[in-house]
Image 1 (cartoon, protein in one colour):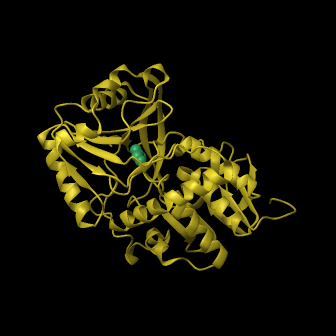
Image 2 (tube, protein in one colour; image 1 turned 90 degrees about the horizontal axis):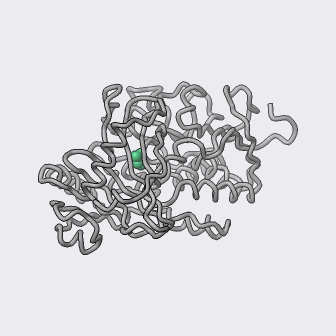
Length: 380
Ligand code: GLY
């Protein structure tokens, strides 16, 4: 029990989702307490921060793609409001994303996806090698082609969490640096579980860790990196992304592994650097400053879990964001705050109800991608 001064809402988890939800709830007049022993220490501490509704639009994930696009559309106002309210720089950048292909096979595969993305009405424009290098002269000369997604932006997740903490606390949110091991430890009122991979133990929902290894490099001499767009692509089938920050940092990721440990392996570092230097050779001269692994909270259909538990309407989950926690932060916070404030879910939340796993026959978000084989490494 939390004792006297019982909050209207208790949030478990102070990553971007939990903090933004708390901020939005406080803005609607609710008294909010957030529990987390180490705010911002989960998946967001390792995340690259790509806001990529187009580059992350995959076959068979239409409902998820719609939610990504909706949240990405909210990002400019969300970032402006957060920066204004805190005076902090979020590292929000809008240069767009270039997706590139090293070989003919890489290009053939990418073109199928760009065709699908265009059929969905998403903004993606194919570019020839010379057009790519006109935008980013440091790209490898032997690239076979690429595409620009101008609306796929980026933010620095560590700066985001720092700003959300300030905004939430200024709005009156109380942060308690304590773990929650069982929901029965909390007051019986409304609870938001935004605990990432910890959600499974708290609720029994099928949220599993999907390991991602990531590197951070730094451009020489304290200069900004020699490229401005987020670069994603494939080099001989190995996928990689490179995210340049104004302060000289480049985030390079990521493996996608069906396992839950945090070991950084030589093979992953080798393959990530090989793919990255194949696409952008200058990276070989950057200082390697960090190698980390994080755990994405994955669900059986890759889509988040948003809404009340079917058998416990006072417990609302906001988790399972898998590869998309940063881009989905604004829409998640808005939809969950709306649900708590009004008691009725926005129709946009329906495909993502946790009930889709409690009642499989009722159908879900229309997505068919299950997990990959245990232990097998894929590349972004
Ligand atoms: N959002 C990119 C990743 O999960 O690697």
